[in-house]
Image 1 (cartoon, rainbow, N blue to C red):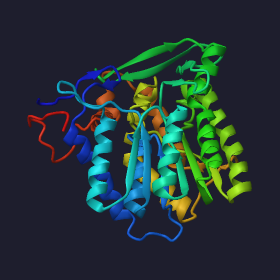
Image 2 (cartoon, rainbow, N blue to C red; image 1 turned 180 degrees about the horizontal axis):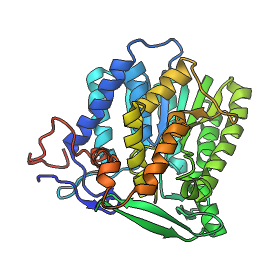
Image 3 (cartoon, helix red, strand yellow; image 1 turned 30 degrees about the vertical axis):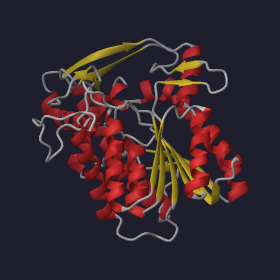
Image 4 (tube, rainbow, N blue to C red; image 1 turned 120 degrees about the horizontal axis):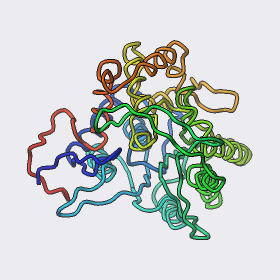
Length: 393
């Protein structure tokens, strides 16, 4: 079939095999240009929980192609059928595997429910039998639901404010329309469910399982990713269900850190990353408009970074080379350029002006859409999008 993008709301229901592979290779090329020497303290055995898209994929690429590390990646993606493409993450992982095999890098992947006990058992068996002790664990899951591994209860996260309803501008990226969206406040059940899905409980379960299995190395590091934002995103991202989940992630970070410090002289941190176009951020009201405006301002200021640039800055510069920028809660800060007052003031001024009529002029709407389509393997340089492909290959 000739594979074309099919956009429905904030998702694209088709992915391009060769486009996804080419997009992965673009990121590998950047990493190999930026990391030309492997520091002695670079990670050697890396577990990435949520490794098929966005920041998690970038983390695995930096570890493997920056340092030559053995990597074990976990994800939940759908394989292609004769008539339907696989998910972008499925093809991204194939792109990783193809490049890793070519480079002679050891790698294994588990496609399954990372929240389950079985995924932890499978990962630990591979680590024990084939890897050696893990010195870096990256936790980068982004899921709308989670099944409790003990009770089997299914929790679903919601994107709602806390306390009172919120009405804010947003951008329909499919139609290029700026409009207002009203969101009712969360119930207490909504809050607790979102914490169960997006908080730190599963990260703790993973680290406890790895600890009990004896597969963590001396000096082990673990990091989980978050986003904070500022005034414009706070109503839906800060004082909201997601914000409560992120508070729980901070709680887990401190609990894990205490254990790792005591047993391994290790560390656990949350890393605060900047706003970028991802499959997850596209689903959050307000964020598409905010990101479109932010991209314009940060690109004009020469301080814009994409996911792989952010993760290179985190793992290579801050975690390995010791150039860490912490806040008072021990979070790595990769978002300070975004939160700079001058940047935010310009974004706020554009926000006030934004309308359907001027959105293409005052924002980087074109850049947002381009990055969105690249997530699914479209609009990648050098790919023939008229080629007749079997999506299974």
